[in-house]
Image (cartoon, rainbow, N blue to C red):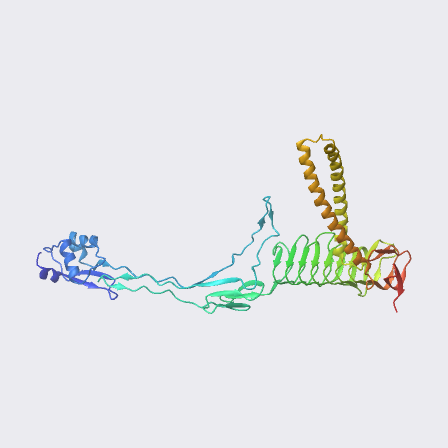
Length: 467
């Protein structure tokens, strides 16, 4: 079978509509028909197929024409174009969920540290759009190029408190808060983080850059830290709460001498029992403060129906106001006003530092005196001479540090003298066993008194009546 015309009477070459596939099919076939792979390739090329010819398919037809005559045979395949990748969103923060307790340096796992809050700060990049890819070109069996298809585009879905760049390819937080996806991947930043229940092992400890609202209790041993305010619609056990703003606790604080409550502004709650509380401004308690350590930069106010302060220590920079202080059993209760609590703490620390520096300076001076005697007699060795020089430098440094500490102590003590506006007011009864401190002066209450106020006047603490 050498005549091309005869070959074409047996075989027909065709292309798929997209010209990506070439076929041979028999128009007729008899026992005398034979063909070589080379003849088939010439036939295919004459039909316009120049790319992707399949030699194994041609060999199969040449080897057994009868078997291939019953159906068409694919003899060429093009290279399909590849569609580019679709546009997508890449988040700049970890979106993984699940319970992931932290492991500390000693290898112990703290199941309270779960780290599930996605904190972001104002101006922080939270997401970016990855543009769709252009795709890769292909080639059909006729040798013609097939353009690659660009991937599908998309628009970033932005919600509340986020902003985009002009090209809408970057998303930034417009305020400090928690990153949240809502609906169909809409990006938001919310300034408030809410816990609909207790703070326990399910939620883990909380550390948030905004305001935290807890619609339940804060249980023993857990920590809540907020750069904004903290509001607890429940009670607080022996937990640690710290806020740069204010803290409001609908219930009370029953700490069991564990944990602490600290805020930069004011604290409001119904009662404090066996707790440690510190506020930069006011502490306002509607019922009672019992056997607790309470410090306020400005005022401590406990004037509710009960309004009781008993046991422990209450310190305020300006005033303490209560209905009742102490009790009939003369439980030791300390009330201190007239200086910010942190200054009192600093003063205690500085006095300890003065003692330490003084003792160190005394030892240095004694050692230097001995070395000076050796130097005066010319019996000092090179190593002792080096020690003398070193001790001289140490004495100079210690003396300078001691002078700085003394100056700061005097500065704080002068502020203690200025306590003319400080006061303690008791609208009910103050009982024996109560210790009143205003500035640097102290007065012990021996007998109960009602409706009285205490002020510093002319070098002493005076007790006057509340009209």
